[in-house]
Image 1: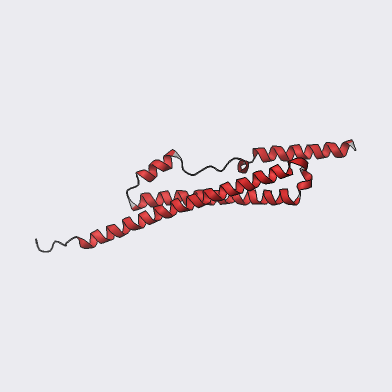
Image 2 (image 1 turned 135 degrees about the vertical axis):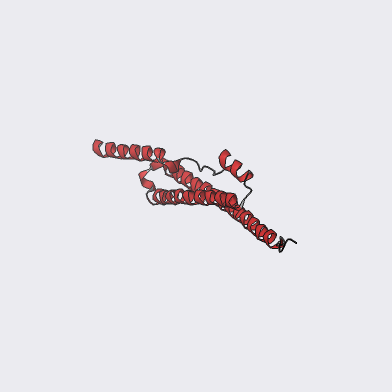
Length: 141
């Protein structure tokens, strides 16, 4: 009897330790750092906006991976809630909140990327339009 209880306690302790140390257990970090904010504010060329858009797209992909991990963890908590006793509902609620936060961050990052792609496209169109409107100098005219 003591061996079973000891094994269960050890397994729960190890699971708790692994969960607390995993990077997906931390709150969803927004991709909006001071550096990227400065880059976005000072973006003047098409390539600047494309670089900022790529940053937000990469952040969305990384966050999507974290969201998938949390979804798998949530499914595990739901299917194996008997392993966690009284903490099962708390763990489920936490994992669900993490998934929701990650999905909101993904949506915000995709919107930012789309916005910067549109700005890059408009700069490209404006550059093409201004290039076609410049008169050619022919024979010194």
